[in-house]
Length: 492
Image 1 (cartoon, helix red, strand yellow):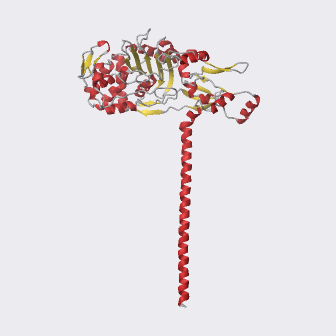
Image 2 (cartoon, helix red, strand yellow; image 1 turned 60 degrees about the horizontal axis):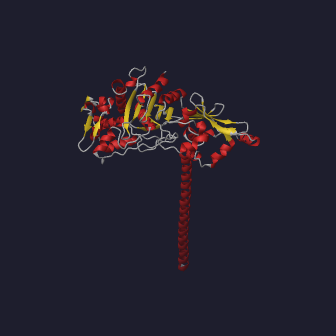
């Protein structure tokens, strides 16, 4: 009897152990299943996240890539849409002859050539809006009907932000000089005008494009100097030098300097003021207004150079402008290890610092817009040929580069440039301008680039602008006269 009880207990114990072992196996299998499920869920989320990222950030660049065969297929089925000015005037259209041959036509010829660009080269807005110009409503029935009939669908039209009156005023004011003019709305980033010279007639591209490609880069008519040109900023850079001094020195309002017409720092270089002008006693505001090289070539020795470099990079030096069309990266290299001469030259916008006109415009626009730099844009909306809106561009902030207080101080300094300094062209206009002149040496000759950046009206900025005349210009005293022609057209 005792043996039977012992046997039953032993069986129960083995059964219990077996159950425990089985439960452990089930638990292990459940754990493995959970791990596998987790991996699949994680992979799914990663794939979903990438699809969102691709569609938001990468899809447009892939679609517009010239190697994308999808675009080739669209060109076989769709007549490219029109590019329109802000007022509806046609800037680019596709003409079809009786035999069905298509050719791109640009009614304004040279006037908009760089900003509108070339369809054949996919530059400018032609490249930026390539997919939209070849897109249709996507109605399957209409597409089938077009395929059966052999007729092409008509692509969407792109309405730009460009204003013909401003574009023509800037183009005419430039004359035969090399350089660029750009204007934007500082509160939104809307590009109102963009001119680059030397220019070309895009209607002649089929015949002369290969010849244009063979030009020396400095002479190339295909180079959009407004966005791709890189120049020493000259005294326009004093906007950032002054800003950094204000940030680093709480007592900036008590700044004092006696200008003798040049400045020398031991171990450095003698830096003359323009034409050797003796400015006499200067505070910071008047030194800015008079563009005193004596002050700004020595002011760098009172700056935190590491912070100065960070300030410049906050203002997009050494960074891609990301404006949608071809552009160059501005460069700033000064740091705490810089030599004496480099510090002197950088303070006045010379030396190694290089900037594009578009970038210079974005800087002054941020000052006009209370320290907020807006992203420039060229397309207001995409619409059907009948005028129904397909998509509308929304203004986008690029960065907050300084405080409203700092922007107000620099704005006041820029206004003093016009009322009491070097900005003499706007002394008696009906509109109030704030801006900064610039003269930039670029070789061993006495030729200089002439800059003017600014905005108007001073107390309610509606337009910001940048003008550069490359050295050797004729017919005008300097860049500010070109800017005046632009603003006269804008306000009149």
